[in-house]
Image (cartoon, rainbow, N blue to C red; front, side, top):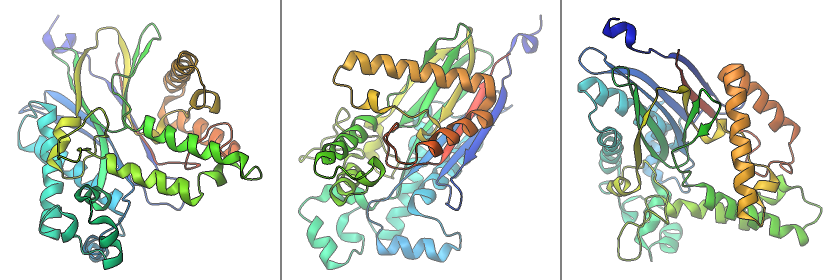
Length: 351
């Protein structure tokens, strides 16, 4: 048997879809790396809603002619950075690759603002005066995204990954077992917001859950999760267990990266995906008072998602997901902030 015949070359399956009439703020990568294209690099990138758009950034986006939001701008900047740095040299450590793309975004913002600092963002006085007591509020104005990047090595039959935020790596083995080795760093913060919305129901019983999450106090709580991006305490020390990894140009990202390596000898497929492609959690899972029950429901949900992706492919699975989201337009069965989100996935199916 030759070396080439021993290698497993995966088939690619890709989706990247925004809801109708809305700009897609996701991005993806699928490219080869190394002098001879020995390895495959894929990524799923999800633009994060900017809490406050600084006027210089808005002017920059308007002048570009592309009608981008800060979230879409961040996702596309990181996509282009990953492609550029992969083309320049073998990626080596994937953390270095993602941090290099993050540095690209940071340099662009530094050139625009002069520094990654709140007092350089050009906010109106009333906005700046409300924020200036805490320099960490700079995070609310930085364009940001989250990402999962993987590298497949056919010679070693291994997969390396690096991840920040709530994009995910789904690993499905031939026996049907499912693993997601990336931690969702956003989930606990999102669930706090959803539980706060549920707590309003006694005072506003006529509102659907979709209407509850649009109440001003809930929207404010959701926006404030932006402070958790690459979170540092009042002394400026990174706190990875309290924060969310966000690719926003800040050097503190390095403390929030997850990384690892997986052997693939018994793996049927892997998929990097944005959170909009994941099967949503039910109300029973999110609001369960028993952690064990919630974990069991999460495992069941992920197994269902993996089976449907394996059977239908990404496009067929996404069609099913959109149908379920449409039928739950009031967000009662699957509590969430948006009916539909951008959905992106890059799947590697192994022979």
